[in-house]
Length: 621
Image (tube, rainbow, N blue to C red):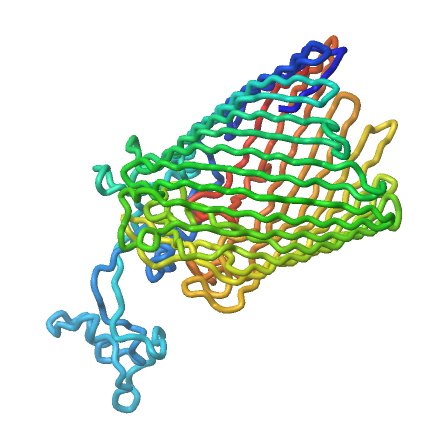
């Protein structure tokens, strides 16, 4: 919590209530109290709940109901959670160059016993009497598969996403003491969420109904102590010290069966010292942090083993002001280690279990920046970064079904630390209400870590394995805003932007092709907000472009369509005594577009919500 002192307002807060239409019903409460001198307190709580989400058309993408397209693409069938059975092999008409004229003349004569197999031939016939076969395709196989009807794992209702319920509760309580020395504060935060995964999964040993809905639950308690000490020693401008303890319980359920989950305890501290300016130009901070986490696996199909994670680092960042130039240098050294405990219900021959072992990562991160300010309102900045990342627990040790992602997840403890060499060049100017900025970036990864498809399917879930590859991500961003203050029509704020991103692999990846899946799309958009007397209004539109180059994980010819999301809102602020009451009405996805984000691993099963709105009341006191 952030401490404060206010001699004139000892009690302040906010109450916010809104009713959702195809959106969550929400309520929140905040209360700040202080004695006007040293002591301050804070309390807040919130709740958000929705039973289901409506969409413009079907929850599944249209291709999931295209039998002719799906029947030869089993990977896409699994993404769509449908199955098209192969009944038997039949003669393939595309194999034959001609149609038998004898068959055409006599197929109605039942006494001849002619069948579909007599219809086609590769013999042109005497004097070329047999007509060409319009279905003929060179190099086609003699036999082809005959398919049955398309069946879904579970039937999806039209116009609604199944299993799209969600409920979240939070509560925070804190107090702080503010003095001439600085401040110190203590807070406790509680978080509880329960939501459905937009799809179905199968737990063979526990469910009699076959495919069942997946629910994810998380309950977290966090205790924090934060201290800021001003000028504790000569030459030290400030000292900051944070201590945190967090306890979390995560569960994934199929119906009422706890399939997998874990209990975790995390202890962490951070200490940093900011020194006084040297030669009136040199300022900086040095520090250290440490964390220790234990994970205890639970559930019938737990996908993580028991683990202990320990991490610590030393860091420093210094800035040299040589106006109009500014130099910045930062460096961090660290170490992350994992100690492996028991493997629970693991598949012993899977990669995640077979190669499981203790791991230690030694990390170095360096950052340089040079900024030139030709005027007080403009800048040009060049940044260079060398970064290293230790892999996460699931990237190393996952070895079972991960129902929150609707996959079987396989880690690999042989993987290396992820490295990135980055360039960024940016420029900006602010003048007369206009604020413009542009930036270009290039990230060159070594051992970029991604989930790759293995072509293995167990219990209806695709098996994906954490793998690594070199990767280059590059792009540029443009941002332009303009603020206009008028006496007659209030304040108008215009804003437009464009984000462009592209990826490049050095070689084709098995099962994925030339591009990685689930990376963000380029986008552009703008918004307008107006404040006129007691009225507030906004309009925004963002267009997400279709990706020209997609992964072959499912089908490299299957491009996620572009879409535009339009949001609008209006509110009225009513002063009441010394308080403020605001009534607002917002509509998201005004045009009711079917929006499937390219970053979503479940994009074939569910789009973003259709048109939705909230009507709310906010009271500030």
